[in-house]
Image 1 (cartoon, rainbow, N blue to C red):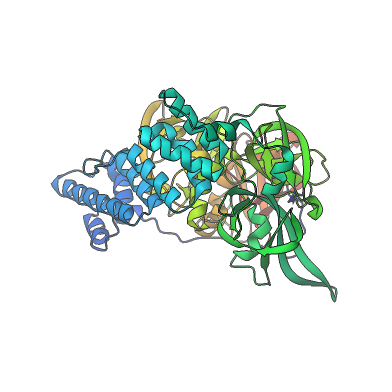
Image 2 (cartoon, rainbow, N blue to C red; image 1 turned 90 degrees about the vertical axis):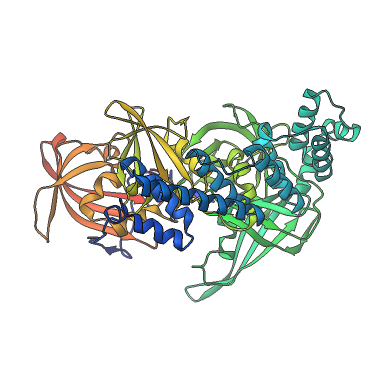
Length: 593
């Protein structure tokens, strides 16, 4: 995928012919006053066996003083109900839900009726992944959780045999390390496999060209074949392939109404098209897991290390322009580029062209350290990859099938002079139900320190919708910790905000400029800027405190997923001379948490 310019810029130049002017005046009614101190509300939810929702809402409101014998009884009933849901999830082998419920019970000190510990729960999930023949997911789960797993000699022997048979080198290497630390013997086959690492020519057989036939595209009365070409790579011996979501989106996007057929072409026989199916997908981080009914000749492993070095030598394999078996090399140019709605990206100077999307980014040991996904059009050598740390975290969920749902709390935060400040609470979200306040400084989540917005996103990526997290805050110089529910994140949080609040309230969270309206007329909206948040779109546009402006157009361009405003401003810097300014935002800005 090629990016048209550097994304996430606040100034967007667009054709405005297909947009509509909106005048949101949402009549949203807060649910806090309805739920707060309302015991019947919780009894009703429990009667409907909606224990999880009641549990989250109870703890969100708990700091406000839900005390007394009746509330204690409700708390006991909620604990028993959620504990029952946990055991039910275990019986159904729904480990994602079980882990989510366990996290909430643990954080609220309600584990008394849970007999299984976290280590045993993690190990049971590992066994489940192995039994289901999700070897790629099992390898990632093992690497991410091996320190917590209760492994004895027999279990280590079983893991060694499993990862050797699956040809997953990094996971096998991890088991061997544990065995050596325990003074146990390691099989000669394992040592030979790890010693005789594959060469680049062998790795070519582990990559594939992803080919999506979308029929005929008609433009100006002329039909041309509509084809999407990308790359992918095998991550376990059962025929699972990792690629980018944007390559295969027409297979799963419910809004796509055209023809779409997905195939894979292998390097050993480029003329053969093998039908493939999409197992799981993630539009936010641009990942997709495919399945083909073959045994791949080579399987890639993900690196066990998530620390990258500037200038580190790397290489990529893919099918630029459909030319398979293409190997390009370069270095890591930077880390932590925040280009997506959540998470960050590796910036690399490895040559990337259309068709490379979804291919592996590899270190010198041949381990996958990322998934290539984009380059910047007209800027040679500026390309990006999804770090392997996210892939390893999400792969078990991709194997489970369907679209990955992320969590959010429902707030907007900016990093200002080294501090993460909560600037807005989205109406109708878990954050509104909590005791959060505007101006709270976020310093951690669940006791884990956070220094950037990206750190918060990383914790939310590893969380599940339905969990309770504790936000560590500084409020008026005092350190506090507040429980907040994690809800299912909308596909586009900005659209949720636009639908639930009025224009007057949205300049601060969306454009980073706190305003006060200075007229009351319906036909004209005039504002004075009270504060501009550092690094915001308003700041990048040169706006400062004391400027005043008239809103000329507010345009919610749903098809382009863009919000654009046109204002007539009297800027203090220019002696309050009048000028026009257009500012735009993509729907997927990353300040939504």
